[in-house]
Length: 442
Image: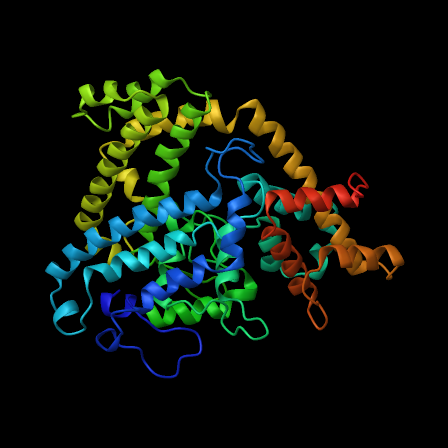
């Protein structure tokens, strides 16, 4: 892969090439990507979507929106630091093409901002609830009418693939979705493969899948423009990651490792002593005098969090640059932090977070509720597809207010329903569930 192609400013529908040296420095194309994402309705819905605690009534707890903003900030720092070193290594990128180190930061920040935009209500539990409806629930009845890959798209409903759909899907008056630059779309794509085959290798890019069959052509157009390496051809296609994807992933890994841990401490699910015991291992030169001068638990933990994030940013940049040539060849098979000298410390923090936060009673109870809510919404809406229209069916359709499905194939209609449910907030899905059950008629 070549950086000149990987940094493409092309957008859906472009007929002329966009050159970096012709860009307006006051409104750079990669920065426009960030703006378009942050003003989108799908991004706005993240303000009421689960990050740690579903339907939390605590102001402090992070939502998907605050998490995404923080990941974007960390991603921008990672991109800028890597960009500075890449321009020193490949001076023609700046001398001939006029790329600047801020361009790398802008691409990674925009992709990081959007990284959770396709996640349904109730976090990863929501993904599993949608998939389970089609794999084990009433949605099984559609299997015989779909291709194997179409059915797998539904059974293994994936937030990353749904995110690519949201960013690129054409709608009336909005051809090409948000029309982001292909560099940003490439960096966004963590798993550049189809839903089948499942985990064909141990390569990090094969862990999940990144696009539905409905967006296959759009994805291939982006991959071709960027010059991504095709790792499998024929009926099952997959590509090597865009190199900057590793930085987007690292930004996410840093934030959920450290900040979810911080949330758990501030919620009282993890004792403060653990903060000093575990996070100090990432910050060996901590100023203990300053730490103990801070008067509140939140301030002390916040101080440790900032230092730990700084340490991991430096570590991720060093690992990326050390392996940059292997990454360009598609030969780097792990997440950056999996190669970190702090891997054991990160694993210790994640183990505490899993046992004390993600598997806490409050989270488990609300995830169970989320399963019931999303399964009910899907079942009520999908029944309308096969039922002879009744008055009740008409009322259900009015309640959902999803896009007109006229002229769609069965697969397209099912994906449309899943997408509609996925962009709901936690609270909206609960409200519709209550109305369907007759629990909220006021």
